[in-house]
Image (cartoon, rainbow, N blue to C red; front, side, top):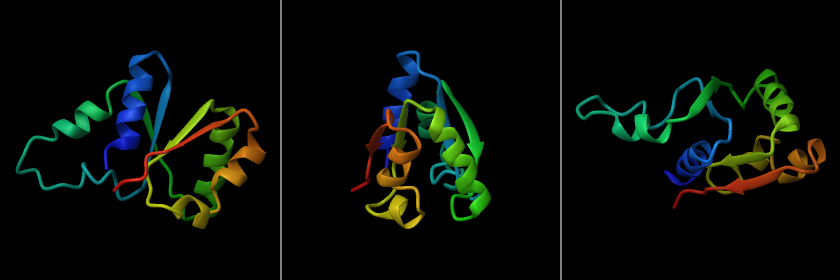
Length: 108
């Protein structure tokens, strides 16, 4: 669950501009009941900017592709195959940006 977010955290600490893309429902850690302090949410999102995009809709996909064209790295944390089903897998992103580095922090 924390592979992708932790990678973004490390890149941010090394000076990268990191943009976290969050679904309209919010991050899974953000949706937890507030019985405990949201330390993982605060820690893992340090040094990150964020934007809400619905990758299930054409407008969200279009904006994501615009961002990917200018990005150096895309790190995703979905289950295996989700990005492909969304139409945003490696084959699509690589055609949009041939210099893109793609990392998958697939949760276990």
